[in-house]
Image 1 (cartoon, rainbow over the protein chains, first blue to last red):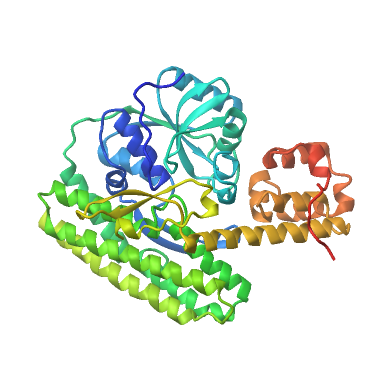
Image 2 (cartoon, rainbow over the protein chains, first blue to last red):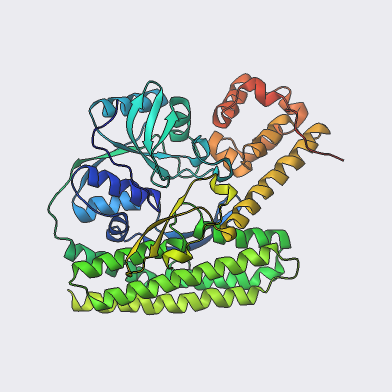
Length: 335
Length: 138
């Protein structure tokens, strides 16, 4: 049994991918970058006191589930989110929804999904996927970060949905109950861009936005005082958060640049937005250069030049400031 | 990044899968391209894996020596650490540390062991044993 007319798409990020595919299925055709942009999902945060696997939290986007929530709020999409205290009930409910012909979003832990490459199976609890059918005990899954749809057995899916710990999914299932089909995107675009630019430029706490980037740069510069093994793992961790599956490369910057380009088209080829998109693409390239510098430093036997790495990140932060100011220019002329 | 510059390094960490990357085509349009891997990313993913493996190896040898209980090895073999296991089981770390002592673990209550087994996707029997692995201990 599976839903008819379902189309899987290969996406950069799991949450924006699921939301884009799901909305398209229900008649609202929005690309992944558009969903990511309308949810104001681009961000930066460095939280040294929140540890995951012994490493501080470094995020290039907003918190998990914020895309689902912001799309609900900004696009007036009505969604139903359900969590479960019992595994059996959680699986039963999924089966019922599939029988009703729905496609269902689910939160899972990457570690327990057997179709993930073994070398990518880490304990990350906020991975999103879509279930669109069932064949005996096998579930048909549209995992946005995979090229084709995949299959997952019942036991594995159940474990993945009910893993415990930080960001535990609690069996979360979600699906839309009401999807608007004609929407004027213009005001939503302006509002969501403004939100990203403002929070990146003006966040009062030193751990988020541009200030967060500079704070991370400061921590990198001080790594020479730390144990060498830790220093290398810390640097590697930064690159993993920036580049590994789910980011679209260069910490979501390319993904957002694609949104800006699409937005520019909707505003009669707005030049300011197109310029901002180009700027963000080069910022993505700079981030990749930063990643490459780190990868080389980790492999090399000689001492790591931490100051050089910190300077590079600060230079990227400078470029980002210019980009967000450009975005505010656009917002000021399109109120 | 231009589409031609999207790395195709066939990274083993991707296991023949492709990752979606947004890049610019010849007409200046940004769109999704599949990447078979990037060496820089592979380096840091493997670095993290190697670190987890080293911890599993050290734990293995300590269990072999009789300093730690098999539970201690299984935790690292599952790519977990004390924080993750404590979050998953709801047990305090200091009580878990007691379970890592062979003498305490030998008397562990079935109910408690079953909770460990559940979050680790193993049977209670499996958790009591140290599997044969090719780790060299000295």
